[in-house]
Image (cartoon, rainbow, N blue to C red; front, side, top):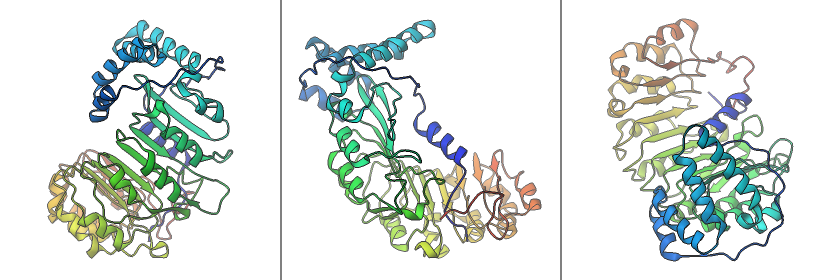
Length: 415
């Protein structure tokens, strides 16, 4: 049985930076001058236009003109960042510097109490010495944010999260990731975090990840998310949801969701039923980690079989059935599965696939020829099976196969 536990530090760091912070530019924050914080300006009709279409820059530009006309420095920031987006070559470099200088110069006006209380600098790639807080500004507002503790420092995540979600600069936040809460604790409990997000997250939020824990920092079996169902009613327009740890899903209703990833050390039948009974008209990516019985993973292959029919998921193109103790059975059923014909990416990593599963794939090679990517990493394949499977498609990932005892070189088990 494959287990959840510690993984490779470098791979997880690269994944975090590549997947979430693409486009962030590191800068060294400079102390901001003390300046009077201007009164908060609001224009409900212009804000409503952004809330309806947060991906449309036009709403920000109109709002920026209004803010600039009323003396709010955020209006100038909108204009500067828009010019930076349009610029190329040396002009773009110069505008990038101007934006960075502006953010540092107007730190107090842009962040107010949040800046002084938490020591956060408003650079587009910022950090706390007492933990980790990163954010990305887009057209005058914080667009993406990541916060959490690390192996060396602790951050009061609940307090900073509440401050961020209730701050005017994060009024149109579109992506939020919450990392580790407490590196020194025996377990991390996120029930309060879920409640804060449900209570304060703006309607513009489209991407949410809880908890983004590096596996070398904290085993997933010690991450307790609790009941995550309050998120559904609070964020009905969510596009991407990633949850890592142990959780209770409840009745799921996220009609706008495109991507759902659940990484757990033990997925229960109850959780799987929550997924199967929901309607997913726009879901394109579904990745499930099933885990092991000692962590509550009581899902069998027969429980999973309905997923292979693809019912209720008409747009699904990326399916991950990972960390499973029944990978061979999945391989044997896939060639005739209706969902396979629609997939462009199939992920069976972290599983228990042996030469039996490999033979099932190789014997039906034509059924998998259309896949753009087939991920079979960290299974139980012998060398001859690996060599044969390399010919199955244009991109087949087969690295880090484990021995029967579950070892992959020096990679520790996931738990």
